Length: 122
Length: 108
Picture 1 (cartoon, helix red, strand yellow):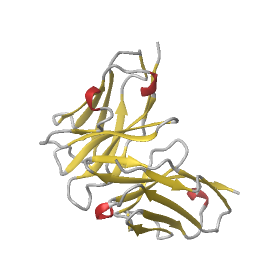
Picture 2: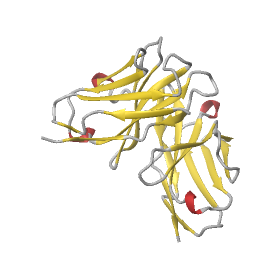
Picture 3: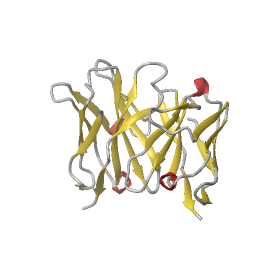
Picture 4: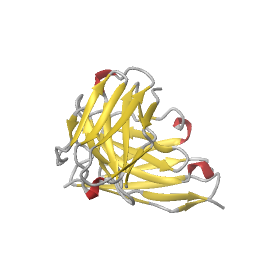
């Protein structure tokens, strides 16, 4: 059974970097899937942040691209998100998720983590 | 960027009734890259429908999706107590995933 679990600080100061990790079980991050981050806030709803394949370049939401890095650690079967220069607008519930690499499976997210609440405040 | 508009924003229904939710795209959706998710309070979204009309693994057949072009529909044939939740549509295109604003199915 595929499971994803987010972890990281729940409080980040303005202008600092938000860092989250997603630990994957039941599926290798070397397999034919993209590993993604999505966030949810009352003001902006669900917002895709970015995705990465194990042997490919990441692709990011253009609205966040200048501040995002998604990286994979195949040795730990984990992937991570770094979001720099955060403001209160980055306060959200952050989900990690998976979408397929094949044509039929590419365009939707089939497994999600439970979410990690991150608050940006001094 | 395609904008997805969901309607109605809220439905108030009783268990056993049917529900129809709409998702309108601001431009034509290619390859039927349109999915639906259910989100219960305190839980992550759960994939219901992908490719506009294919049910995800383990999803009951009371859930069905239809549509093409710019207009898509999620139908729940008979509401069970666990179906009262928020539903989102989602599109992929031009290297970008976007979500609709959500529609709540509440208990009357």
